[in-house]
Amino acid sequence: MILLSFIVLLYIICSFVVYFGNKRSINPENSWRPSVSIIICARDEEAVIGDCLEALAGQDYPIGELEIIIVDDGSRDHTPEIARSHQKKSHNIKVVSTKGFRSKLKGKFRALELGLAQCSGKIILQTDADCRPGPSWVQGMVGHFTEEIGMVGGFIVLEDPRIPSLWTKVQALDWIYLLSVGAGTAGWGHPLSLIAKNMAFRREVYETIGGYGNIGINLTEDIALVKAISSLTSWKIGFSHHPDTAILSQPPSSLREYFQQRKRWTVGGRWVDIKGILIMLIAFLSHILVPISFFFNFLLGFILLAILLFADSLILWPNLRKINRTDLFRFFPFFEIYYFFYTIFFGFVFLLSRKIFWKGREYPVSK
Image 1 (cartoon, rainbow, N blue to C red):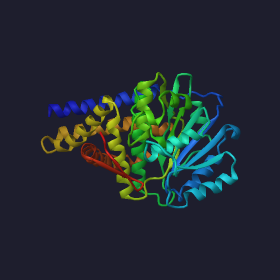
Image 2 (cartoon, rainbow, N blue to C red):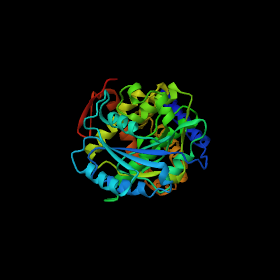
Image 3 (cartoon, helix red, strand yellow):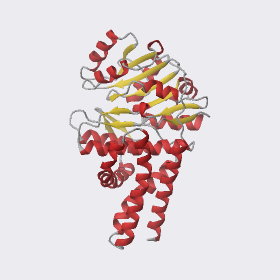
Image 4 (cartoon, one colour):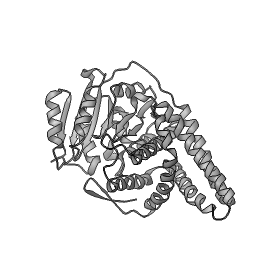
């Protein structure tokens, strides 16, 4: 019981570190208007890519400084046709295909390498075809760059326009929680990760690290890029808490897709540094041992559970307020039930996975 109490103490210490890291983050506002390239790598996204391009067409950023690169990554549906129909309406949209493109990289890394070779902007924004940015997204992300910052992340809120559900709300809290941890660690200058659905970086920074081809193969490009920038350059990584830079995205369309997504994320977490591994280990041990403690000492188990709930709300609530989504907090009890099962189950996935399947492709786990 002493060991368990110590682990829970470490968990709440980590939560306070994340909390104060988020408070340290600033949201600078400047009038900088550099050239911007938005890259979207799309594979079998015919159901959503049209809405994404409509949202990007409505950006309040000077159109002469904005280009949108759509990389069709071997789609087996009508994704490229839909993208080209939008290209005909907007001169700043360019559609390219990975077909025939030769690279040592695979999967999305290969598509990103092609997209980055095509773009000309000083700032690169990355998002996905299932995302719907608000009209001030580009300006908000660009406005967060200072002379010291080379990369910026933003929040993502899951919404299902088809069938709003409790499951979607729980997943939305999960994403905001994960991003809050990334934002909090970035606030201390030691970022663990961002999520590529809402990410921006200087082209200069990307060229400095030698591109994706120089940073090694990983299953999650966001973790790979964050790690490379942190370890190979002196640029800082920031995080925007402004509601204008929070974008909407759709949840996985099935439990199978959800599992494959989270499995890819979990295994991709093997590439974070030792600080990230320790945080994941503390979270895993806390959530597997606290339920067990009820069988030995109910009062102690109740106290430790209350501490865990407080620690998680300490991370979630302030950022929900910042992005104007406190409406999601009423689903916090359901999120906590989910989070216990999630942390335990995917903790074992982290240890045991050998293969990943994503969008019809198989990827071996090499680390």
